[in-house]
Each structure stands twice: as structure tokens, then as C-alpha cells.
Image (cartoon, rainbow, N blue to C red; front, side, top):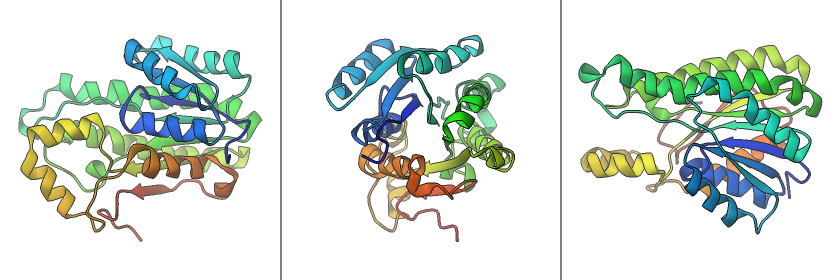
Length: 249
């Protein structure tokens, strides 16, 4: 119960990697606000996780910037405090760069970078009170580059840069900011496997552990660590949870 008595917000948690993170948090003792634009799926996820601990679902389109402060308000109203903000939601168009439109690029930034930035700002004073942390999500697609992932990778690298700055500026206030770069079987990765099976198999072959990560057991567990007292002196880092395919020492 590493997160006993803590409260977290996890965006995009109706399914996929973010659902795995929310699941791991609840099982570790945290109260979790699940945020997603897919209302029915989000309610189903909330009902599924309710047997493990306090969890609440809030339907929000993260591209609606005016709705974002209400997420922080909802967490405080429901649970009374905020210890961890997990920005995991991200949509993108999988298009080759030469065919990438401005509209397609905007999808990635409107659902990933801008919500991350604005939620971090809104959460900051509450995280100071709890001496909490932010966990943002990056991607090896941004660090190393990957075909069809121009908008996704660009948004993820913008998030990593924002996170490093926040770690520097917020450290003196006791707020930690870290990034996880996962490789896990999410709906987006499943779509990529369907559209580009050869590229997918080639990516698996680059993973020294020769498998794709599990959203809860691999990615969620790493997020629990970063949110817990065990990582009290860890900030400004990018944790590669990808089976070793991206090696940074």
C-alpha cells in the first residue's frame, strides 16, 4: 500500500496504459480520479476498479481548455487533496511526415501537450501543500524518431522539455516532476500493429526482453514507484519503461 491515503488524477484512464496506471494506483491504496472523454468506457473502468478502492470518473474532453481547471476542482471536492497528477492522455494521427497536415499536428498538441501544461499549472499550488508530484508521459517515438509518429513524437518531446523545466523550478517547493516513456500494449499500439504489422514486429525485435509491456504490471508499477516515498529524491528524470529498447545511461 505504497500510496495509502494519497489522491491522484490520471488522464486518459478509461483504457490502455493510463488505465493500467489507474489500476496500479488504486491497488496501491490511492484514491483516483479517472479522466477521459469516453464516458461509457470511463464509467465501466470506474466500476471495475471500485472493488479495489475509492475511484471516481469525470468525463472531460481535454482539448476543451476551459474545462481543465474543473478537473483539479473535482479531485479536491471528492477526495480533499491532490498528491499526484498523471498526464497520460494523448491522441494523434499516424501519418507520414510528408503527408502531415497542421490539423493533424494540432490533434497531438491539443490532447497531449496543452492539457499537460494547463493541468500542471492548475495543480501546482495543491501539490505544494501535499509535497506531491507530477508524472508525465513521453515516448521513445519522440526520443529516437519513428515513421508515422511525427505529431505524436513532437508533442511528447515538448512534454518532456516542459517537465524538465518544472522539475528545476518546482524542486525548491517540494514538488517532483518525472516522465515515463513506456512501450506497452495500448489501443494506440494495437492500431499501429494492425496498420503496420512489419514495423511493429521489427520494433518488438529491438526489445532486449523480447516482449511488449503490460499497462498495469509494468507501466503502472513504475508510476506507483515515482508517486511514492521511495522516489522522494527523484525528479527531472525520464524513466524508460520499454524493456530496454531505448538505452540511456
